[in-house]
Image 1 (cartoon, rainbow, N blue to C red):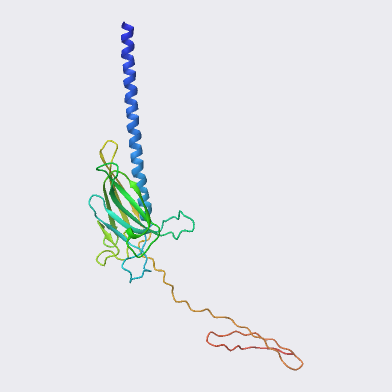
Image 2 (image 1 turned 45 degrees about the vertical axis):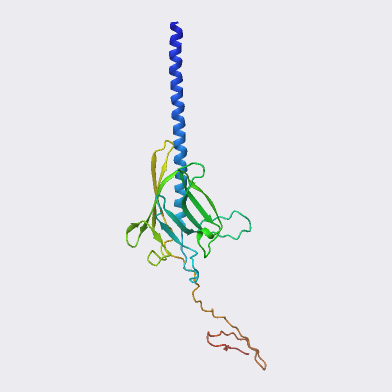
Length: 254
């Protein structure tokens, strides 16, 4: 009986130890997976924001701009739409280039009540219409997001701004922020709020201007030959001036 009692106690202790180990392992793996999802989302946002650009080669008669950078406060999750140079064509012979429009926004989860997801939408091309009217693809950038704050560094005024608008005259027309700070607060596997923060630098802060400069036509060289009469022959070479078509030749005879 004593031996059986000792065996039962030891078995209970071993079982409890294995149970705690398994429980801790599951929590650590869930936390690592959750943090990895958030880090991948932040890295993608930072990479795409670094490739934002503006162009002055726009048709000013159109109601909308093809290139833009519009960030504004919108409840707990900020919204941002911008043109960038990182689009990849996924279909052969598609009418697409390396430029597109990116839109970050929020949307309630369709399966989990009370959960909000950070959404990313990328258009197939740029156009003189609103970003929502352009054909594109929408996917979840990060799930179960509580807050997202985007702050924009104004290098000219040396201050952080909560909003940025390149399409408004009273905003920041034809210039981009030099840095963008992203603060993303999510709910971890235990339901606790955890903030993540990163910063990225915009590579092209000034708008592109691809208007061709006036180029003068290069001077076309000319050559001439001549022959002499009599008992000798002569050869000559000449060059033409920029404003004259006459050729001056020199010759020698013998």
